[in-house]
Image (cartoon, rainbow, N blue to C red):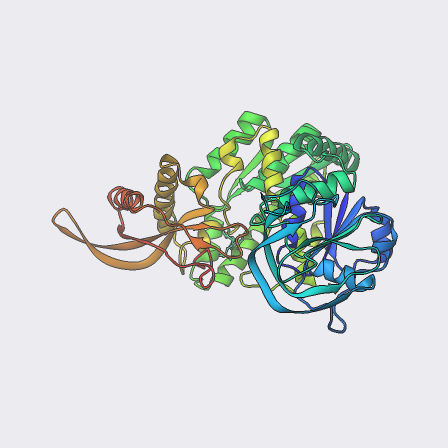
Length: 521
Ligand code: XMP
């Protein structure tokens, strides 16, 4: 396994994803992870990430010396390489020219890290790599034992190596896809240099997870809040395989779900897979709690709290039952874990208070089981497929916990939710039909409680407006609006206005994030 120490680069999560894609288990920890914990982790290799700071300034982060004393290979990327060089006796200074974006690196053929990896060959016989650079500092003098393995015009040491100790540094970012050979370079480091096998595969992950779940929960009963989203669905399938009917799921229909969603969840899990699912119809309760509330954050809080109340009641019934539930399962995934670690150090700002649908009060005194805690979203999806979940379910766009509650602007009414459900359904159906669904990251309709004039036949109509939103994004932190074909938008608009009474106009949202957010509230 590989340990990644995070010096604050925006790309650190990508490093972890690339290592996992290479079939190697890795964990991401802050750069100041305690030395004892580093030893205990017993890594086969360590990667030092990039970071925003300058090594030549005082009091910027340094790797703990233990990193270089464990006798395992180390790969420093960007800031990680600079701090490694400086800590081992080299010199780092501000570069006269900054390099951002595309660059071509000349690689020398003898290093274990880059040997035979190239995009082109230069006239002099050097390997040339197309890479992504983002740095203002550069290594000026190498530490003892190191030699240059790659260079650019601006950086004589764009890649460095001490082959004896297995220490490598790259000024460029192998983890981003713009570095075309990045994947191979990271695979080379993990497989050949650190000696890690290609063992982190979906079926191994499942076998492992099942063994761990069984060992943890034994013969106890487990409760899971099933939302129909990818994460909780995969947890349900995994737990069902691990412990069969020791699992009970609670599915809360809050009246803010997509068209037919409740029936779909019941069909997939209860009927098809034989999972015990308790469906709670709580539409009225949720809508009552939302009556008269317009503020988005208030709406989120009320929906979250009502969910907890309903879930709590169901759990209490089950706890008091003959077999007594002792465990609560949650679909927490690795980015949630990393994000909340970031939040606790005050690094992340709360723009919207996202609630995890499973987030439950402590007084429930159930022990937690979170079998996806170490997995990225793409890994969760692969597991879902391997576990036999329908592909449409596994590849669904994300759907926020508060559901249509934050897609009906202002006060929520049942009639608005019914209208929105139909519009959303048409939009999604047409996206599938035009083979565009998988080309956008998230698409949905929004209900605007303003009215606009239209004509239907010979009659004047004064009715509500539907906005369509579709975005392309990798991480949902930034997004661009999807440039959907005009003919396609035309078709969706016609169907919505013709088929849904009470909608007179359809608009398409062309705001990026930033400055907009993906959801309208
Ligand atoms: P924003 O609107 O913040 O959305 O750009 C980014 C992603 O997060 C989803 N989202 C939520 N998910 N509870 C959730 O579970 C929420 O309250 C919530 N608000 C936004 C949104 O759908 C998008 O994928």
